[in-house]
Length: 308
DNA sequence: AAAGCGTGGTT
DNA sequence: TAACCAAGCTT
Image (cartoon, rainbow, N blue to C red; front, side):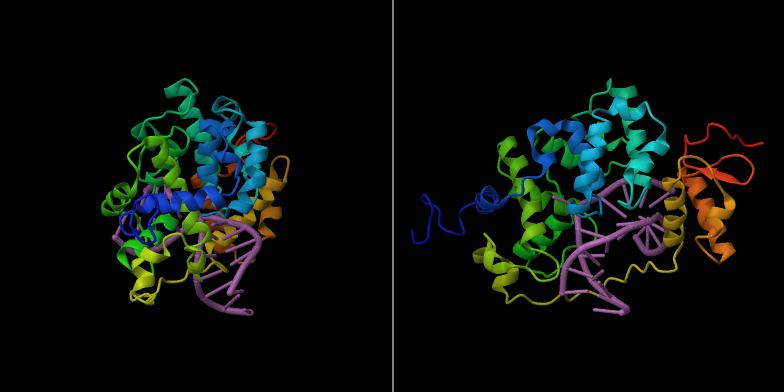
């Protein structure tokens, strides 16, 4: 058994074992991975991490959990406080939905984060990825947890292609589940390890294959690292979009203690049609409310001035 | 089911 | 420097 560990030939040893061994050596000590984080801490971290890098989440997560150590504490405050605490994490609708999720957890589950996949999935802002992540990481269940990192890792290591699919499919879930060890606790750890490998080594731009624990069996590397064949993803674009205007408007509301006059909002964007459309969007989404004649505020910041 | 939704670091 | 990229969800 040349090159074998404990009787495994390289291609017989489970994929997850190689990744788990690597994970044991290099895993980051992230606060939401510690047992004391609890299910609420895990849930909050997963929502904050949606489309947002770890380093930016860390300080906000700490403040959030200190102020709102359980769902009931958050649900007891106005939604606007959640939006304000969210700060500049981006996609502030997540703060609103996290507040709604906290209320739903209090109402439907007695204030305890549910441990069943379908109960998690029914919460606002919790989709396929997040529900599985919470069930696996907080409750140590065996579920395929497939995010962009895992899609890319599987595309390369298993399928031999440079890029993963844009969205999760049933087939992806099945493929990943087949890679999971049978024991739930080990499977949960493996799920974190897959994501960590995608985040630290099998990265999008310039993968660090030399330090990869599965380089000897990676289909993409064995095929000579062929470039992506599919069409290029169309760029996001941000400058000049409604998103940028919404961001500026909301920043003004967030940084104020209470209602602000419309003139303050007018100052953030010259073009009135787009500005009004963006403001209307914030109102429609519940991220802002009318606060008296010509005034606007975060939801809950409206105490003194009410619409006439 | 494709498009909308923030923000900032990296290359 | 402009483009890319980051633990997605919703409609």
